[in-house]
Image (cartoon, rainbow, N blue to C red; front, top):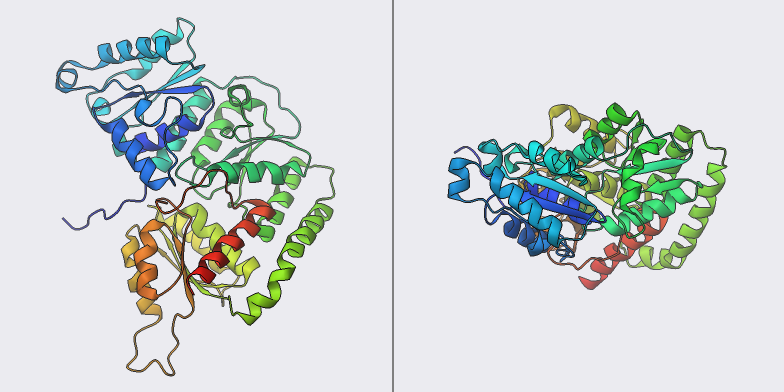
Length: 445
């Protein structure tokens, strides 16, 4: 064996599909998979999503066919039909979504035929092939949303001026998903547009069903949500733009300009940005003296998924004045996407940009750091990584201890924080991130 998986940073695609469905309002997932899949996903989610697991028809309460040996030999369709009937009787929902595991994908159960049978009886039901071997949980998010866009979202709706859909923030895989989506709605609401985020307490299932009337889809990721956006464009003719997660004033201003330009809005975007910047820096003003006097500037090591590796690095460079020395992407990405992301972090600041690496094995971070700062016989005149700060997942606590550095978990898995409504998007989110970073730095002294 040439390689192995050490401390994985995501679920399988079934897990990503399930967590996405758990976050949608009035939506009931029905798992067609082996015994134990739902429980394994629930406990992994509990341990990695900052204690966020469960809810109505979520966690260990999710309906599942729990196929066994007999079903593998003779087929599990009868068991799935029985499970769908029971779920319709017991669970109160408006949209039902069948998702599959590895075993039922391998034996070739036709779940789409089962969905079609119940749809013929007037049930709003969708089927998605999400066998875990297809990929990780981020792919599962795109698979299940793409099938909902194809099978459930209303076709032929007229475009509604100033209406947008938000994609790319993956529920539970992003522990801050509720707060981040709320922050994006608040930010874009300053342009006077209608923002459909799908997953927050302000969203409804009708919003999802009628999302084909959006004038534009906004993908707040360089990778996640792109397949769903392409499906919207293919099936419903909705164009899309991509942007990073808007953390802090620079990224938020860029997003406001991009959206206003794409929608051709008749608003004074620069006046909005100036006012938001004024309020943002007014909050920061009392911190300026202690930031300098207490030497709170840090060298930063970022080990994270695509969304946070990009957004946190740019925020530290553009807004906070810290010095990112290493940014390690933990996603499995093709060469083309790797090159695009590398340029995104190094082209704007070629002299100050970090070393960018793509490695799913986060334990290698210490090796990359040692390459940048090789050990010397004497540290008296050597350049050292001090003072340092590690931003990543809970798995990077050991790295922070080796470096003698403070640590903040922002990327999955987050097992050392409890998150409910906290978010880092927008101008306000940038302030929240500064609070968290500096609180961790001060507490470690």
